[in-house]
Image 1 (cartoon, rainbow, N blue to C red):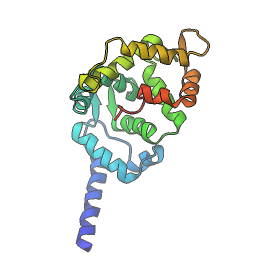
Image 2 (tube, helix red, strand yellow; image 1 turned 45 degrees about the vertical axis):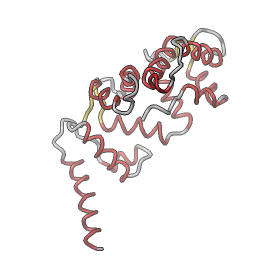
Image 3 (cartoon, rainbow, N blue to C red; image 1 turned 90 degrees about the horizontal axis):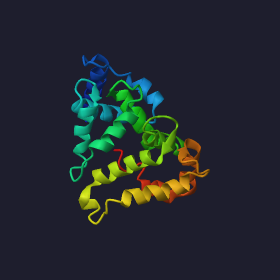
Image 4 (cartoon, rainbow, N blue to C red; image 1 turned 180 degrees about the vertical axis):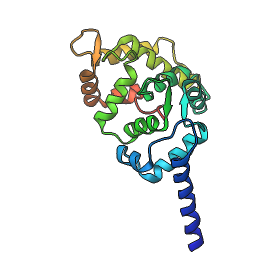
Length: 208
């Protein structure tokens, strides 16, 4: 029994050493600091880091690699456009790469954040040009990318104009003052009032 425990401790130590002493191009924050800044435990962070480093040995992922990794989860459709939008949302520094910190900060909000945190994150995803409001075209681009990603097998009888119809319906509900754009306040208020909107828009279903 003691030998098993020692083995487990050694394994944990090796992940910690890897984390602290790694010679990759990007060295992440310490586990303790990330545990403070996110809603993950140290053990969860170690598992996430192992997976991240396995896919991205140099410690950061660029958009092309991100798309390749993401496409493995949705082989039945074309996930490239949705992965592009998702990458932009994770790349908070706008430097063309996503580090382990960027990844876990985003994941922490999506999986463990308050409803307001999650809706803020989703709004940022939909606000493609980051001007503080969502247009009908931006909403359509995201919705279409979700349908493309889910593929014909998921929506076998899907007509091409269905995403457009869905967007028209969502937009009418959300654009409360009818000025042609959806603000963050309108977005959050609409989603909180009508859970069907969140479910229909698949806000958090396809992120991970």
